[in-house]
Length: 75
Image 1 (cartoon, rainbow, N blue to C red):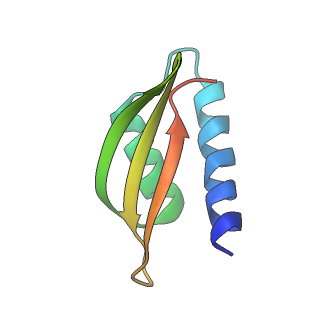
Image 2: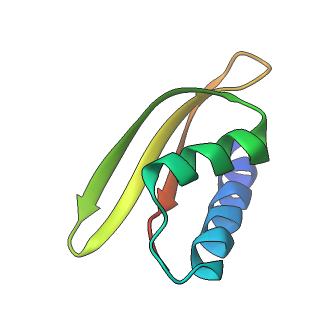
């Protein structure tokens, strides 16, 4: 179930990132995660993996679980 939740969020984030011409900002990534999950954002940071930029967003779900969602900044 956890993997399905994370995979679904990554697909949503990737679709949102590819829909825009400009790279996704950290602020927009946070807003998207809040909107898509309804979870409370605990922290967010930018990671650079080679030439890729990924936003790592930690959330607290309604059932009390802490999850980390990675959102690519661009397609």
